[in-house]
Amino acid sequence: MKRDLIKTDVVIVGSGVAGLFAALCIPNTKEVLLITKEKLDECDSFLAQGGVCVLKDISDFKCYYEDTMKAGHYENNPEAVRVMIESSPEIIDTLVKLGVDFDLDKTGNFDYTREGAHRENRILHHKDETGREITETLLAIAMRRKNITFVTRTTMIDFIEKDNTCYGIVCEDEYGEMGAITAKDIILATGGIGGLFKNSTNYAHITGDAFALCLIHGVELQDMNYIQIHPTTLYSKSRGRRFLISESVRGEGAILLNENGERFTDELQPRDVVTNAIVEEMKKFGTDHVYLTLPNMTSEEAKKRFPNIFEACMQEGYDITKDMVPVTPAQHYMMGGIKTDINGRTTMAHLFAVGETACNGVHGKNRLASNSLLESLVFAKRAADVIASDNTKKSGEIPSVDLDSYPPKEEREKNFKDIIMAEIKRKDEAFYDKWCNDED
Image 1 (cartoon, one colour):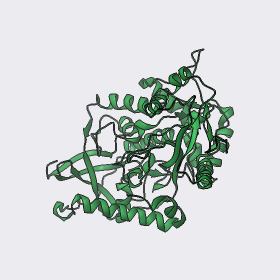
Image 2 (cartoon, helix red, strand yellow):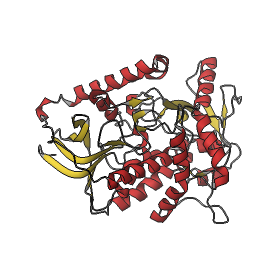
Image 3 (tube, helix red, strand yellow):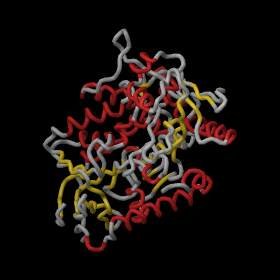
Image 4 (tube, helix red, strand yellow):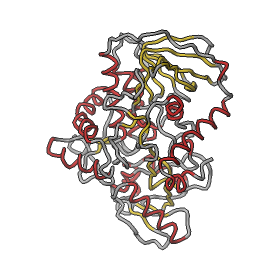
């Protein structure tokens, strides 16, 4: 990136479902520049296995609403939950029209499945790679849009801000070259913080940079200690990202066993409850994992329904339908984040946040399974709609940017991490001591 000023209408940071859908929902009369930290497909949306929830019909609204609220310990924002659920049929219809291929049953209708804490089958899926199917479809369409430009391997390192108004961002490319991008509106879709944890299902480069910048610039955050630990990731002694074994496997009948081969919990409880049960069982036996098995399916059935998971387990020497597959909890998802309203607005003017980066309160203290993709899509569209309808002009000149004032990459990354971890510790020292104290 050259050391000069790039001007555009909208800059989006992040190439996952939220960033891509926001870009597609912005009118093609506006120029959109989308930057991403690594390659376009190296985002956590690609890793989402289970599926995407939808309100099948109005009779399920009360049940779906209550399931979401209960999983979130009733700390959810009721308005955000309502908006997400009511918007879901339109969002799914849009995805289908765009070409997303959801699995069908033998009669040709949607093959709804169920996961933990859901009382009804209301989750659409594409085998066990729903996130990849949706993200690849959106990306293919976005790459054909003449008003959308992609810049890869480029990291946001600062906001350009004055008087609580965002004018753009400062970036650094893979060669260490810095530059400034100014825009009328800025959308943050940078994902969570998994890269700061020793064990996480996230890509290592997803390190919560936007959260650190918000703390530096006084943009309000919410519930930064509400971090979901997924109960079942494939156990490994090697370092690196943990392979997630989707909750949909338990939704289809998989059970958890302890060191003695005994079942010890109801596998379809909310994720935090199942995680705590696993932690207690590991303490009891002095181990760092428990076991998962899917006894009610044949190998052929499991390979068809969960091809990605089945193959990953087989590579480690386990047939999930016959063997006890070792699993362990790992950091998975951020329910907190940058505080927004139900249209993605943050507490800084012209700065929006969507997807896992944002916190509009829809998930409360614990996210209900398969609500993440839906939430990203619903509120990304709402943010794009606000941007599309806003014809106001920013007052004042764009603040000057001193590109020589920024510290080297390693120093900056350590500083960002320290800022984020200090905020988590401030909010919840017990959680920090339990899950964050062994981060790299």
